[in-house]
Image 1 (cartoon, rainbow, N blue to C red):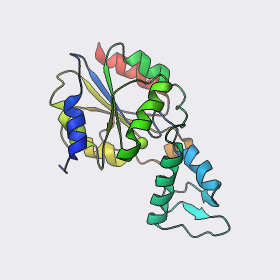
Image 2: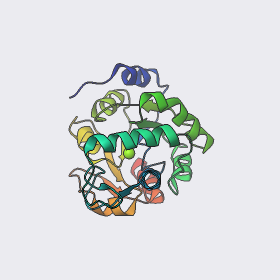
Image 3: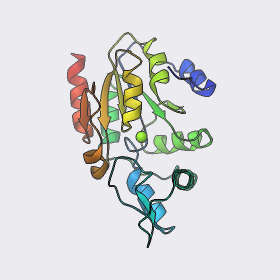
Image 4: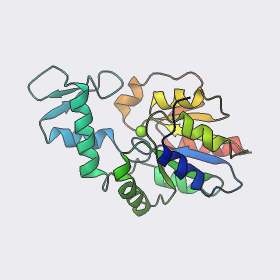
Length: 217
Ligand SMILES: [Mg+2]
């Protein structure tokens, strides 16, 4: 298991969890739109996203060029996107209603790999949209963070994320967690590799809520 950053560990340990099942939910591309917003943002700077494979690196070009820009340039674009838009990303359709519904029976924790300096702004945005759940900023694969929470929760535990790397990381901790692979963007949904061990793969929040509720009885 890889290292858990101190700021993540401390935030996890401060969470006030009830004696209920728990759903741990990613933010970008799961409850807030990401790919479509990023695409518009980079478009205004003369870049283009063409989703030919799962991932961003390798699929972003400068307008007029067919050569993909290097990973460092992609990372800089993503950093610029968060600085400009973490406060106004729109919700993924159905997410607000589904989380409100699930929160009647489960605790909800939002586990996000947003840069730590934007975590407060992200929490404020989520609250403004009606998703006032605890937000924990993570760095790197999410397995260690989820495994730490799993130690405190005896009930069914669910993890929802768009990133195959995070699903694999959580799965490989061996914690008893049902994995939900959720991707809002239809192109990336089609391109995403199937992760062995996934319990549900969907881009429909109503289906997520229905399946989780059914698993509780
Ligand atoms: Mg995500």
